[in-house]
Length: 375
Image 1 (cartoon, rainbow, N blue to C red):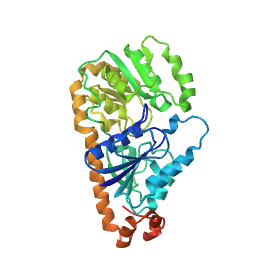
Image 2: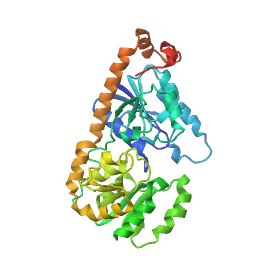
Image 3: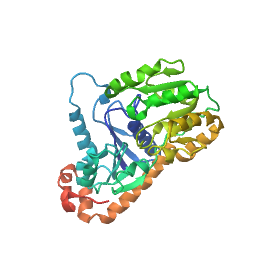
Image 4: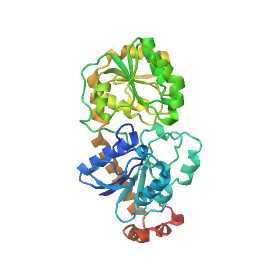
């Protein structure tokens, strides 16, 4: 199968440091190549892949310095990644709704995985306008704000099976990993550790947009003997950081679409203690791989119950449910189904357009009523 993977340009694929979406794009891409598919990755030029790389920008936009126009790169990404009608059997976009206008007019099936939250009110009109676009959710909970959308499937994230190693025991500290942001509630992670009397290590990035929050709300809390702020760490450093923790604490205060750090913890054998938010109940098996809580007091009590969790069960849950090869197989099954449905609905004229050159693509939308392609 000829597959295009279209990634955001903010981080490389995979990212050098933080970047959940780009990591998932990388894992899917590499697994698809290993399965024998012909894959083209549209991404920044500093990306590393076994697929054919179509570099849109020389490097990840996050790393670029000096004066430059970000929108110029994004325009080229959309045109080259989503505007090709003759090179692919299917195009897999990770650009959220920004790719919809071109996807709507492309006779090649375009499926979009949504990686973020969908509960913001300004999003509904967009998804109503492009209601025919086939979408993939990363959890069932992610769909709740838009239950009427054209959901093609839910596919949980996965990690390479050998990326993290199982750790039999811990070094007796709690871990907080990811991003310093109000919705991640690092302040509550600190409060949980203090009430439980257990050390907490925080490995997290601070985006410029969250700098004021960090300095005002979090930094004053770091001056405590139980709290250690490590800063942003790489994937290579995560295995030791998470694996040596007695538990990962996720006191999130937002509808978490998936929570990649949870399955990173499971891969290391580390239980997770988290609030009942978004996808959390879909990922944690309460009392088996961690604890799902509703209050701060319950979080503190759950931390005290962590020694009852069998770390081997956490790793077993990862091996069964959250590996990259399982994720890739799920996507291939989805691609095949969409292609069958699309083939059944396309007219011979539309199919001819789908195999024509780029000039034909510019007028291909006219082969569908209103320029829409329903999948």
